[in-house]
Length: 160
Image (cartoon, rainbow, N blue to C red; front, top):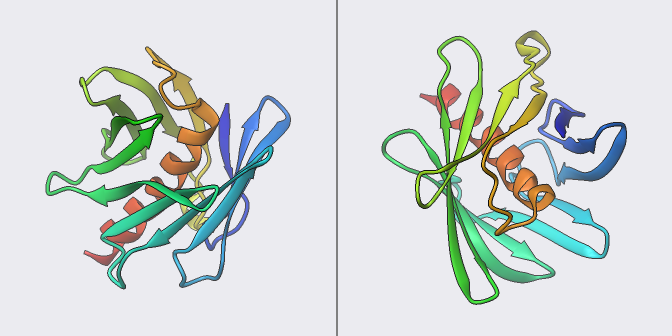
């Protein structure tokens, strides 16, 4: 699986081999509001405030979780599915490139997002390297949230 950047405003596609699974599209350059679909399921991500410190996640128009930035510089994705709570933490563990490690709430590595960065073009593509993925949330869905979170991470660290 790959996350392929399609526009400098943050749009990206989730690809499985050469098949497009989904595309996340931002409403506008400065909005932060984005949407995607997988089959008949629609997803929306909307900043809760103007500082984009908390992003609400909607699935078929129902709020199911959020994305926040913690004090350690990690992106935290919290989701509720079938009356169960799930948390994922994205950590950038590379110095000169982007290599996000995605852990579940038990600190078990689920997968890596290894950047194939084009910093000069303001685009980042990621190769998904699987580890001990637990399937609590479908991978394609989680990759939408992780792709959005990586864009948010880049925006937040570049503002510092």
